[in-house]
Length: 490
Image 1: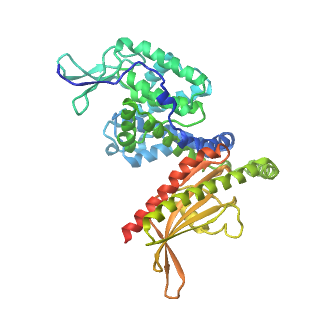
Image 2 (image 1 turned 90 degrees about the vertical axis):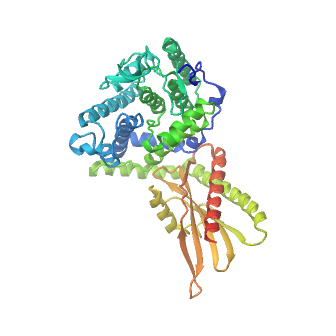
């Protein structure tokens, strides 16, 4: 083994400009809406409390699956997330380990997540002592870890719970390359350095998404414990995110290799943006779900009546305040962005078509009463498809991109602006494709075509100008998929 190739993953920990300059717009476009909605949900919503409980259970389950500690069928996973870790729900063919062992691991993982939430609630500092306590908790029912003996054979060694490693834990990849983490003798100094840099970053208001992602990656390059490093890394990044009003960082099993590991390896090579983007996408998914939670979920008449009365009074006040004007202006600005970039892409396309097809654009700005209700039915279907609440009471707008090959072949991409979830400051930009045909009575008949474009969801309460870049990307992607669909039918 003397000629074995090695990859020295660990380098002296620092928070470089490469990290600090990462793009966080995926979450920045939406997070103001969440922060506006969060306090009301925390104070009143039983749905929100159940949502957080389910997120904790999901993290507890998936973190062990990602680390290949056990397998668990998807069906029982969903049951456990909804109802809790109850032995009677599971049969032996649902998992590949003894059920008592599975439940012990799940209990440890859930207790560790609860511990993280408690530390945030108590506003405790992130310290080396806390990190060691967290490791001891998450590995409480794990006695051994895999090691290599003096002859190069795999063997079980006792797991040091809550203590840093005393042996190297450098795995050999499938390609035969040995990955070198921080040597045991340098772990204490590097962990002290990691915590110190993190605390300084917090004081300097470094973006929490960057802090959490960087901390996670730096921790994994140190690999301070003999085992359990991935579980602890995800818990510590979760703590940073939760501290800033966000959600636990959970990696679903189906994304572990194709997104998570791949992004980690790119960060190893000096490109942290894909890992920051993945962390942002995980948070964005949680925020979108949370924005669709109902604030009022009580069955008590008096309690609901009081909330109902307060909401009507608040609604009446809002109509007299500046927020309505702010939202109105923001909707129009987003509409203008969509219109601008639809025109830009359309002009590019026209120059390629040499007059062989006609492209036309139509639009209705949010609040234009005479045509605002066009595409109402399509928006309802679109919201059902992507499982969110479409707020019908607030102004809507739309644009169409029509491609006409001849009278019998016409296609229309509809782009709609409508409100998303229960927060009035959140807007969805949706896209759907229709085939426009003429029936025997010379009447237009529209039929939907497959176009898998998820809504682009943004907050419109702050920094509207910063949203333009991702809106432009959404518009271009929608037209690209439209062209691909039309081309496939010709």
